[in-house]
Structure formats: C-alpha cells, structure tokens
Image 1 (tube, rainbow, N blue to C red):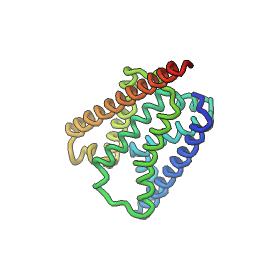
Image 2: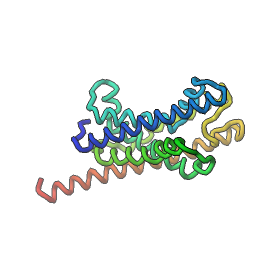
Image 3: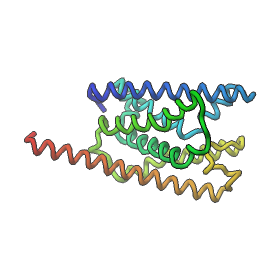
Image 4: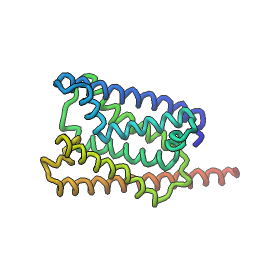
Length: 222
C-alpha cells in the first residue's frame, strides 16, 4: 500500500510516538515489579498481558510499515487495508473501554499519566486519523468484519490461559476468580459485539469515503 509523502510523514511521527509510549510503559511496568520484589521478567510478563499493549504494538508496527515503505513479508501484512482497519477497530475499542469503564479504577501519577494517556488516547486518535487519511478503502468488505474478530477472541483465550497459570487477570471483567467463568464469558460476548459494531462502522465509513471521492472526481470531470 503506497503512502503519499505527507501521510507518510504523519505515519512516521505517529510511529515514533507509539514506540516511545510502548517503551515508557514497559519501563514503568518493570520498575513496579522490581520495586515489589518480583523482578524484571515479571514486569515483561505483565506488560504482555494487556490488550492495550498488544494493540498499540500492532498499531506501531502498521505505522512503521506505512512510513518506511518496507515491502517484506511483515511489511506487506501490516500495510494491508484490512489489517489497518482491524487495528483501527481494536484501538478504538481500547480507548472506549478504558475511558468508559476503567479510567476511574485507578489514579496514575507522574510518568504513568504520560504513558497511560499516550496508549489510551493519543495513539488511538493518531492511528484512526492515519487510517482515514492514508488507507485505501475501496476493497473493504462487510464480511471481513467477522474475520477481524479472530484477534480479540484469541486475546480472550490468551488472557484466560495466563490467568489459569498464575491467577492474574489484566482486566476486572475477565477476572475469573471474582466473577466466575460464566459471567466472564458473558462479558466477553458483550465486548465482542462492541468490536463487531465498530468494525461495521469503520467499513461503512470507509465505503462512504470512497463514494464521496468518486463523486468528487466525477463532478470535476476527472
């Protein structure tokens, strides 16, 4: 997916912000686990347990691929419009769930405020803007929305498997110890419906953008 110079510059800036935010969050998480006597690897383990981190990692990779024009296998994958749209869907849900359900559960301080806002607010906004400006949308299909749910569904299984190993769950709505498997499954289905709705909305917006651009070309005689 070739990206024009101006959107490529924007993707470069957004990618740098994304990698810095991810690096800061990793450092802060390691510092916390070391201070608690758990060690650095415990921090890495916890860090990789969050959907927010994994989704921001995917966003940073997609932005980097778009900015660099890298055409290798990984670059081709992360520059696919489908992949970009699936990441946009996921990072919007990250921001929505955090600000609507999780923000009030803790009070970050210092650099944690910076990392927290970067991953949950700044990067979702930057990535969605990149998606709107630079991602071709002519081939987006409604049926692909269901395929995109593989990622959040796989994360749900991953989170439960991790929790079964050490009893730690990254989010309160997937905490099996507190809620039980039945209620956690119900929560997961509810969240999955949000993902599907957001995916459908993005496809609809993308198709509308394509129609508007085509109408503009026709009206100007292009």
